[in-house]
Structures are given as C-alpha cells and as structure tokens.
Length: 150
Ligand SMILES: [Zn+2]
Image (cartoon, rainbow, N blue to C red; front, side):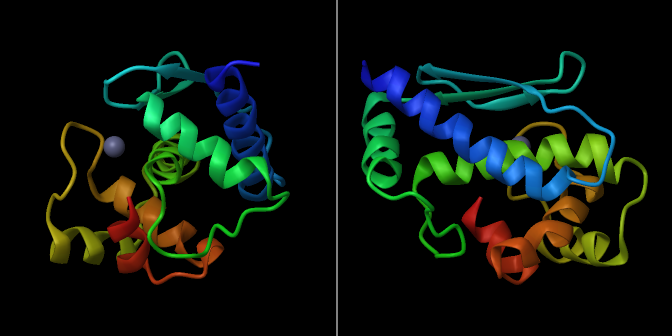
C-alpha cells in the first residue's frame, strides 16, 4: 500500500472515531472525506459537505508513524502534528455549520473578542470560536489551548 493510501485509511479512521463521539445523538451524516498529497490549504466545503485534507509527503509519513503502531492515539496531548491540527480544524468547521449554526455561545464570542483573528480566510467568526469552545473539553483542553493547537 502506498503512503497516501495508508495515511488516508488511518486518517479516515480517526475522522470516524471523533465524528461518532461528536454527533452520536444527532440525526446528521458525516462529510465526504478526501485526502490528497498536495501543498494546498485543507478545507471543509459546506455546500458539498466535503472535508479535504491536503498534506505534503512528509506529513503523510507522520500520519503513518503516529497512527500506524498505536491503536488509540492520545488526542489530548499537546504539540499536535500537522495532520492532527488540520483534521481537527476542518472538523470544527464541519461542526460549526452542522451544529453551532446561529447558536453562538458567550464563551465563543469572548474567545473571538480576545484573540481576534488568528486564522486566514472566511469561516473564522464567532461561530467557529463557539465550536472551539464547545469541543475543547473533548480534548481535555481549555478553549485557548485548543485554539493554539489549530
Ligand atoms: Zn479554517
């Protein structure tokens, strides 16, 4: 199996594992999950419900290294690898559009107000920060800590 095929199947496993934890009680379907070897920004396309992870070869090797030999990786540790930051970042976009929607939280607004705009491009408003604040406990982190890992 090529590196990209191995990395894709390992990443998809992680995606599904986290997805199940986040959406188990909701009548919502997961996004189409796409992994490519590319120097390009990853993204979640809301209209098509597609989650793209674009990773350079070295980072695909990290995926295989990080996930290949462990059954359950510890997602709560700090200093996340690039693939982990990208995966969770894009999953938070999916969550922002599917769950948070217009229901921004005080915690999310506060986080947005204090930390401004550390992320490029559209989609990083109060709703995105509400998703960060909402999901931080899942990773056993404070909202600021999770934000700094993205
Ligand atoms: Zn983003």
